Image (cartoon, rainbow, N blue to C red):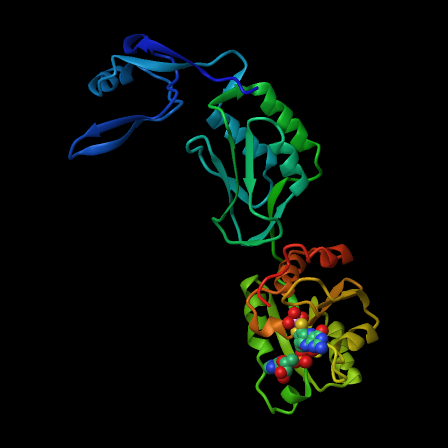
Length: 333
Ligand SMILES: Nc1nc2c(c(=O)[nH]1)N[C@H]1C(S)=C(S)[C@@H](COP(=O)(O)OP(=O)(O)OC[C@H]3O[C@@H](n4cnc5c(N)ncnc54)[C@H](O)[C@@H]3O)O[C@H]1N2
Ligand code: MOO
């Protein structure tokens, strides 16, 4: 059971050295309304006059039993225990300590660890979903305790629990500056019959994460021609190859065959997320080669947006990453 903090009424003149259990508000009509003292403030001699001036002859003070910790300190201790690289902690506000991104990056949250920590009574650790792109200054997680005070031993237990997980529970991984080669397939684009719509979308997404498209090359619906362009990029040492179009069921859809044809190890062709189900992820050594389906051109968030940030943060995509996208993966389609 979470114990209720004990409040004791004391004459204000005897309250020096004691802690305020809540914010104290001053109202001077027409002049000021706001917090005169913060919750948790330890009363000093100098505070007696201001307290008397807002009508406080007696005040409640917090009896901090031996071995207990105040919510502000607890929030800070929890945040410190769970946070790693790429985060800065705020001052406690109403007992809550927020963890904010110090850079553009990929939020990595250990979901299992968050659940384990929140199973401890009186603890609230709140995070965004893992693997999302976060901007500098964005709040990624926040921590507080539910009661005003709690036994410090519980925070110690939480700290031990947190140490038991490998790596930080909340962190923001940086993006690397990668060179990206784009091969755009499709006879209708190659011949100039229609204007390319993939290039600008891909460039914008890649650049938004701090990488760059070194070049976009065009190929007709011909397996060997597509393979040649992929191989050229690999030989030039790009870090990622994106092949657009030709990912579905028609006889002219040559992209999956061409990616396999250059000797890449196919992680998987197809993912249960909609839109973007016809995505292929493959690796030639350490270099990812992705086949991008039509939806990437026109839908703002597809399976490509799930994997691009992870790849640019240096992660390797495995098959289960792709097969697990079905649950919650039905977006706009
Ligand atoms: N019977 C089925 N039909 C479709 C399936 C399926 O599983 N069974 N999948 C659908 C999905 S999902 C997608 S996505 C699309 C098309 O995917 P593709 O990657 O094969 O796209 P294409 O056939 O090459 O082109 C479709 C459409 O987009 C235009 N396009 C392609 N590239 C460009 C470009 N660079 N710039 C502008 N426009 C481009 C192309 O002209 C076509 O109009 O298949 C569904 N159908
Ligand atoms: O694979 Mo498609 O891109 O879902 O529309």
